Amino acid sequence: MNFALIMLVLLVLTGAVWAAEKYYFARHRSPGEVQPWWIEYPVSFFPVILVVFVLRSFLVEPFKIPSGSMLPTLLIGDFILVNKFTYGIRVPVLNDRIISINEPQRGEVMVFRYPENPSLDYIKRVVGLPGDDIVYAGKRLSINGREVEYQADGDYNYLEGGLNFVAAKRLQERLGEHRHAVLTQAEVPPVQLSGVQRFPFRDNCAYNETGFRCKVPEGHYFLMGDNRDSSSDSRYWGFVPERNIVGKAFMIWWNFDELKRIGQSIN
Image 1 (cartoon, rainbow, N blue to C red):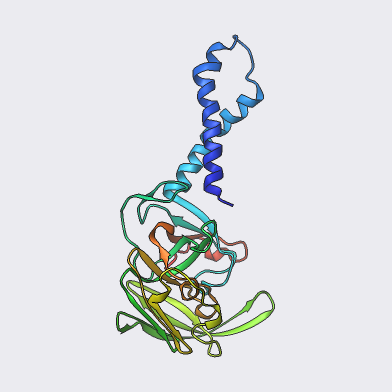
Image 2 (image 1 turned 60 degrees about the horizontal axis):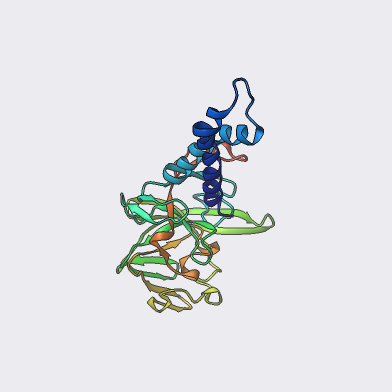
């Protein structure tokens, strides 16, 4: 469901009725005559829809985390806020950037439109910038020939799908200015070769049993989930075009099961 498009349609419809009421119907209505319902309701809802549309389109948009691909940073059920103007001002619905502000940086958690189906929003961590040479071998990430800094941080166990117990190793990883936790499972290969799709610029990547190497094309980004062995990300469906960017995730604003997470910043 394209919520932005639905909001735009509602905004146009209610706005048209509001304008017609203000500049025509109200002037031709007899004194004391009550507004008909088909004018009253759109006129009442128009300011609310306008405020919500502006907030969601240009400032902040809420999202709910549906999967465990970003564990342990984000939990299933986290409600997060995404800064829509960090990376620039975009045309609503079309998502074309008209004003540039900042470019995505390594380590930032980004919401974007899934390249295979732009009606879906995904959330992953920025690993590779345009022009970067990304190598992931033996569960270790290297960028432009330099291995990313890692530090062991104990075990992390969780239930996947409510039934499957997963025992993972937790590592502290440093990407750019961001230090964050990632999870790996010893028995899972760095990449499931059977899951790799044909995607634009697929020839920029080389895969084998130990991992992969990818050259990020200009105007694109390489993203991975923090739960490295339980994430569908750029390893499998390719690079994220700049025009697919939605915004930068910056805060958890609600979690029904763990209230202590409310207000936590997303690193």
